[in-house]
Length: 465
Image (cartoon, rainbow, N blue to C red):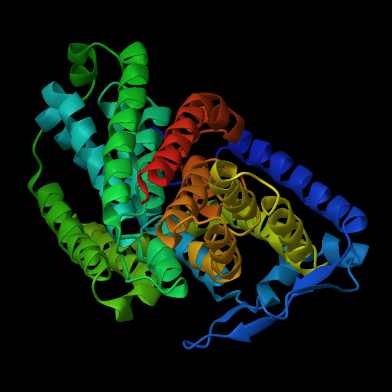
């Protein structure tokens, strides 16, 4: 990372992701040709959010999408309903690109990484454990995921400075926050919304989610540590490559960078308790990074003209990631325009009704996993799925609490696997990790996690959770 200038998306990573996403776009279009259109009746709930009306149920409608519309879907998605989040993600990403390019050009990023490596190099595995726990906590306690993307390049570069590689850094940061998000201990965007829709007290039944968090943390730490041990450089070698000399201007820059960033992170933590902040977390992080980056660069002696130039260069370098996000988002747009998503969901609901009780729990998990491929937003999936899967669970004598746990598991872990998730594509691109390489590295962990979480759901069923 320190050898590159700014947050340039590598050509290899970009082309690989582009090919994968375009293949999925084609597959989505083919689905619109073979699956009939259908839709559930929807009504507004007490908060004005549209949820499925189970009484009026499902009906078939005219489906399909014009070829020209599919071809232009990466552009048309910007004008679709609910596109505010997509636009916010893109602006958020451009801010990150500008800030990190400026930090790199003024030398502060390299200085910060060298300082950390010099301070904690001899305790790097303890630092790994603490950093992994921090990121998992961000996901589990406040529902952060996209908001942690700006920290991924820092952790990746730090990982390389400590003698590991980019995969280790992404594992410690992005994979960890995804695992924490999925455990959903006090995640307001999945568990919080889903429990409210199911008529349960918000964040009730946390015991199983805390158990899941602990087990997944140790599984993740074991996975990352085992890999790091295989590829690590000797400690004396990686320390000698980064001879550290203290610089007062750079130390001042670190303070100017750390203070606004810390305020932003503390504010994000507070959003777990102050619901009014939850709709603005991405904006808060973007503003915090913008203020931190600009003030830090100026504190190191970088001139305003040079700062403006490097900031714009950073924005330009990040544009390939914007294209990937638009293409990935177009898959959901295509299926919604063709009225296919509701048809797929209806078929899954019909199938669930003929399964044995223990299989229904796992099938609910599977339904959420499938829908998460098309709809990455946890709260959006909750409004779509909870009115359907909770009644199914209740018919079989399965508690709503266990149903919510299955929803949290299905919504979270695949966020760090599916190429339709914008945050994953951004994180991998900024870390110079190809999507195929990522899948090859994480599939064993994902399989182990799937088995572990399935067993936890069956345990919950057995003990009457």
